[in-house]
Structure formats: C-alpha cells, structure tokens
Image (cartoon, rainbow, N blue to C red; front, side):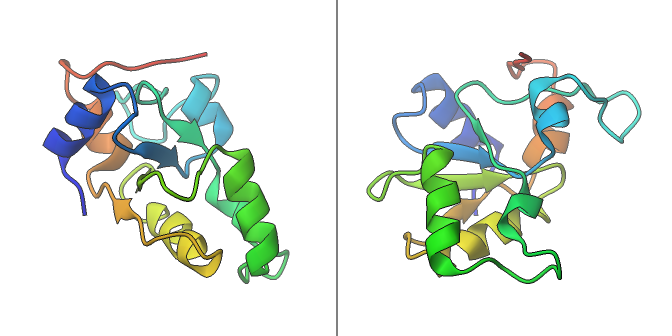
Length: 130
C-alpha cells in the first residue's frame, strides 16, 4: 500500500522510483472525459501510464491468461525490475491491475489506496491532461 506522500515522491523523482499504473478509462486518464465525482477534474499524475482494468478481462469478466496479461502490461510500460504502484479512481479497480500483475508473473505491486480521488482533490498536486 502507498499513500499520498509516497506518490508525491515518485512524481518528484520523475517515475524512476516506480511506475504508477492507472486503471481508469482512458478518457478519464487523458482528460477527455469527465470524472464521475462532481468537482473532481479528470487527468492523471505526471509520469503515470494508463491501462484500463477492463483490458485485463475476458468477455465473461474472468482474467485473461498470464501470457496475454503480460503482453498488455509490457505494452503499458511495465518492466520486470521496476516497482509498480497501481491507482484508479478510489483504489478499488487498482486491485484488479495488482492481481493481473501477479498472475502475469511480475513482482507484487503496491496499491495507492487514495488514488485519483485523493490526488485530484488536493490543490497542490500536479495534474496532467493530454
């Protein structure tokens, strides 16, 4: 588990300490779609990468096979030796990414339980849209 102080440190270091992997829909990540919580801006943490959690699931909502999971994580920028912190809107779907990483054979990641709701709700934290 990681808290806001940990994530601020990762962002300050430019992502070298860990990859922040965001499970929200791409529109919420890139700022082209609104957040479901009133008053909360969309966007993402500087240096984070997007991998919507539903891209790890089969049509019947079961997890993809390990090789398919691994390919999706690698395409999102996950490297075997770099620590990963998963995030989402509230810390729930970040756990799907965490489970998928383990199923794909990567080291167990940390989960940022405050996720975008905590990050975006603070005026001092930088937000990126693209």
